[in-house]
Image 1 (cartoon, rainbow, N blue to C red):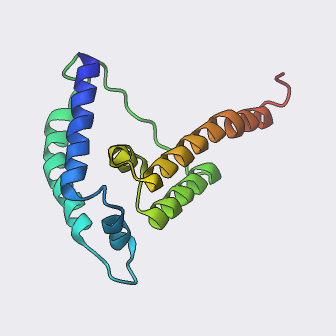
Image 2: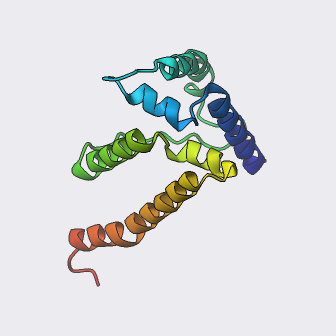
Length: 148
């Protein structure tokens, strides 16, 4: 049941992204181009999403300690603003601004068969593997130099 709920939530999210135009790289770069021909339409999409989300969150989700399926709702600890977090956010923002695609819409655009999307996803997977296999191990080795 949990897997089906996750699948339906993901499909609903993807459908909303597609209908709103948030998977269109040209619209996203137009939204991010504050100095040029700025397209404010995505601001209205995000604002509308918040107007719909916030009452449900504060009335139905936040007061609960368990999900509708009985799973515990775990509080996310606050993040520390350190160099890796800021660097990762900067890289994400630069990449998003250059091509107008972030991971969610990229996965939605796989079916388009466009070479640019396939290249983007390959680069995204390579980056994930690089961080997982190289950066995390290097960081852990630096933090505990006596561990073998």
